[in-house]
Length: 266
Length: 271
Image (cartoon, rainbow over all chains, first blue to last red; front, side, top):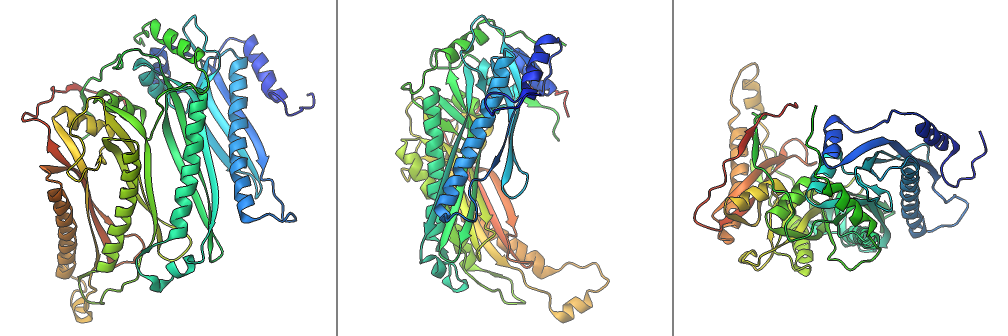
């Protein structure tokens, strides 16, 4: 196997693409409802695709780094990890001639104290159309969700992420958090969670705008915060979602919801 | 197996839209915290999502001990739970107000006790600010956007049936349940008996939470409250202290008749 320079796809993934081109059967990670849903919207699975990167958090004990620098690096680490992972997933999908990837599952697994593995798994699909999209669309949404969106006149465009990191130091904190301080809002903590979430949401919004889509459906938001000694607090927030673009013209979406009552619950 | 083939123009139009996408096009951009089902139903109910709105407060909950053998409300803790939720909700409403929203749907109000620090809890309210396609009297009598913790599905059904949400209403009561006296505990050994002070405590606490919720609904001049959840949240106050928390959406009628089309019955073939 040739040595890999870190550019493009790893040799093993490249070999898989060639194997795919040579053989007939396709693979898919979609559930049965997912596959049927995708088909109803005009998409056929062309193969399951993966993007993966193992990264090390880039600071060491010998370097004098402040708490703020550390968490800024942590956010940058997440940002770059997800970006590289999704980029590799997209490349693999492009290589097998797909138009998009649906049902993407994103995960981060710590391998040891400093190394983390980022994985994105999804199913590449090809649209039954003459028009090609110009780029590989990606979404965390499942097959049935993609189907409902597309039939209502919205198309998923790209997975979007936003990250924020801050540290706040406030000498009042130690007085606000003792047993004797009674009911009180803790200013430093509140300021921190507001600021990190706001930074993550701003970055998310900017990414949606830059993608050229019309809006975004947020799939999850996370927040990690921890105390820095007696007087400080640090946190990292993230927002994940899918940017969606509207293609139906006219004020109302073309489909109408049918009111049904499922008979399967007591 | 046969599926309805997609109308041929659907993937065609969708792919064309993607091909035409350019970075930074001027659009009215929205973000939403709704699921796909909710997003589509809220659109269908005649509302446009404007953006995800959020308010949070990290609160230090004070300290209060209940008397060992007495049923009593721990009013300081009740107040803390009330005040912190109010802070989170009002910050979320302020964000929605900035966006010019008519209301906030699918609100989640969550409490997370932090691992670090003593008695620190984060109260966070998240929802999606929406604006009606057709202008109307959507804001409530306090001039604020309406709030509702109903899912998109429930919200759609509510609007279809001719009701409008006014606001989320809640009542909270932190209660200390008395321990049994020693002689009583001794006398009860080996017998099936009701522990009256326990029963009474649970009745009292629940009643306090419910009546506070009702009082909030009366202030909004609501016709009723839907989707009420009555929860007993132990948090981390130990065995004999619990929070009774009642939350629901106060509604007002939009019109006199409340008929919706009779739903079609389906028998799903999945479990």
